[in-house]
Image 1 (cartoon, rainbow, N blue to C red):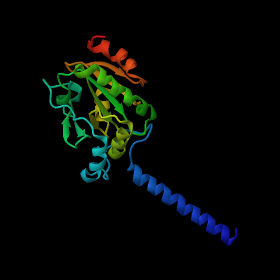
Image 2 (cartoon, rainbow, N blue to C red):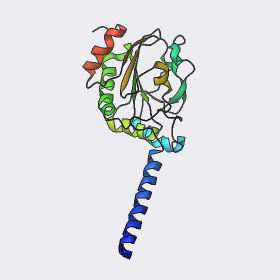
Image 3 (cartoon, rainbow, N blue to C red):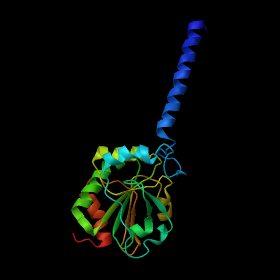
Length: 213
C-alpha cells in the first residue's frame, strides 16, 4: 500500500467516524423503527430553552385538563409531558370522562406522517364529541415538534419517550396505532393500523363510542 493510499484510507476512516458521531448527537439516542421502548422521556438536548422555538412553531393545542372521574384504570399513575408547553400531565385524569382517540406515533414513522393530518381532519369534523390526543413515542421531542409544524397538525400531544402509555394499554409494538377509549375509561378498540383519511377513521372509531353517523 502506497503512502498516498494509506492517507486516503485514514482520512475516510476519520470522516466516517465523525459522521457517525454527528448522527448520534443529532438523533440523541432516540428509538428508531423496531427499537425497544426508550428509558427517558426526552433527550438531554431537549431543554425548555431549546424547545421554546419548536414549540412556538408547532403551536399545539393545550393538553386536556383533568376530566370527571379517575380515568382509565390502566393509565392511573402515569405522568408524561405535554409537548405543547412542557407541563406534567396525569394521563388518566386528563382523559377521564371523555371519549378519546389516542394516536401513537413517532417523528421517523412515514405512515404516521401521512395519518396525522387525517386525525386532525377527523377531530375538526367530530368536534367536542371526541378528543383526539397524539402520543409521541420517541425521546427526540424537538423532532416531533418540528414534524408537527411541518404537517400543520396542532392536536394536543403527549411526549412519551418511554412508551408508558402503549405498555399500560398493551398496544402492539407497531406505529402508527390508535386506541379508542370510552368516557367511562374502558378500552373500546385498539387499532394497530394506519388510516389514510378522516372517513376511514370515523368508520372505525364512531361505532365503538356511539358517535352519530
